[in-house]
Image (cartoon, rainbow, N blue to C red; front, side, top):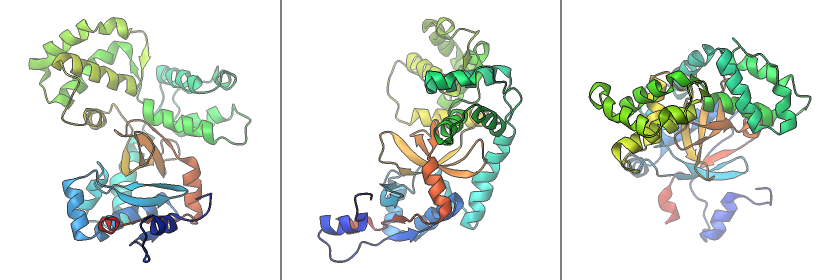
Length: 332
């Protein structure tokens, strides 16, 4: 804490304890090492705590990150699969997380309409003077890393972190782009997969919903749409067709999972903590530009996000301490 002291000292004072709380600590030198630490921590939790996590996946364990306090969630969607692994933690992280993500990301090449759509959205995130520097850039047929390098060359600032993070977050959040003529077909197909309906039998209802919503007017065929807009279309169709605003499941998370299977999302995040920021989680993500495992902040469905660049820099120094208070019962 910048104001001085530590969370350990604060907890001892707040709970009036003379003995320290049980705590697991690590000074990792890479995101892979940190990921392995969290996997090992999950297995080292007392049996009664492990059972609680299985019953209630949202349960969190107080943890400290660099200058931050949040909740480690070993039962988080995606992370819980690490519990079923039979491999050494580092091997599992490499083979089950990093390798498949790299393979998918290395295949991405921006076509003409995707390159333009990406630059248009990026320009809208930047101040007008900065956004104008993107005019005339040709990113066609470039990989994410090549596109980022070419974009950053337009900026003289020595601190590329904000712009670089916006670029990485854009690739994660917006790609792949969809041409307007294909949007309705993609949305209907994705909705059928998410809802478990057969398009041949339920497709008429969804198409009627699309017509009633004025789909073709809301989403002109000459425009280009990103992944987040596709997801909004799917949600709108589902709500209209089923006449309800409620779902017993995390519907947006189901859309993201189905989109990956349909190659309509390249985002792959393993959430591991409630960030203590509104509606955001901490996650491990293979960067679309560096192809390295990093720490990101993502939305609850892990569909949108951006890297925590300062954290990733400090992580590589090996000087930041991460800790998990592993015994919930001590706080009661």
